[in-house]
Image (cartoon, rainbow, N blue to C red; front, side, top):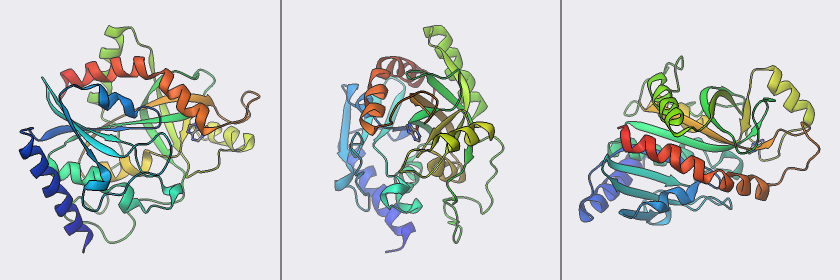
Length: 277
Ligand code: HPA
C-alpha cells in the first residue's frame, strides 16, 4: 500500500473512533517526550488508543515512551496527545517517525506542541529547567523530506525562517509569567544518538550555537512545518552535556529528571492548552 493510502487508512480509523466516542476533531497535537507521557493521562474525559491498534502506526520501543494517542475533551475543544515517539536511532525511517503527526494533521490538527528531554549546552540552563525552543540546528546528517515530495502534504522547499511560531512562543511566555514559571528561550541542537556525546563534541556544539541537545524533535518539526503546522517546542533540561560536570549519563536519570519537572510542565502546558487553539 502506498504511504499516502496508509495515511488515509489511519486517518479514517481515528475519525471513526472519534465519531464512536462523540469527540470533536482535535485542533492541537501535543507530542510528549521521555518521562512526560503521564500528562495525557491526567485528563478525566479522554479516549486512549494504543498505537498497536491504529493501522500502519508503529509502537515506540524505548523505555519511558508508551505508545498511544490520547484524545482529551476540554473546554477548549479536543486536544490530541502522542504518548511516546519513534526515534531514528531505533532504526525507524523518517516516514515512520512522522506518520502520526501527518495523520493528525489530516484529522484536523493545525497546531503542534513538541516536547523533549534535552541535555544542557548553555551554562545558564540547569536540570529541571523548561526551555522554549526558539530555533534549531539539524546536525543529524539527514533531512526527513529527502525523496520524492509528498505533494498531498506540502511543498518541495518549505520555508524554515520561522519554524517555531512567534505568536505561540509569546502566548506561552505570557502564561509562564502569569504562573511565575521561569522559561528561557534556547536553540535546540539535534543529533541522531543513540550514544551520548563526548565532552569535545559538547564543546563544539555549544560553539556552533546550541543551547540544549537531544535526539528527537527536529525530524518531526521539519515534517510538521512541511505539513503546515503552527509549531511550539519545549525542552525539559534533564542533565548537563557530557564533560560539563563530572558525571556519567544514563537514560534512567534522564527519565527521572523529566518526571521531576512534570508538575511545572503540567501547569504551564495545561494552562496554555486551556486558552489557545
Ligand atoms: N544528549 C543527547 N540527548 C539527550 C541528552 C544529552 O545529553 N539528554 C537528554 N537527551
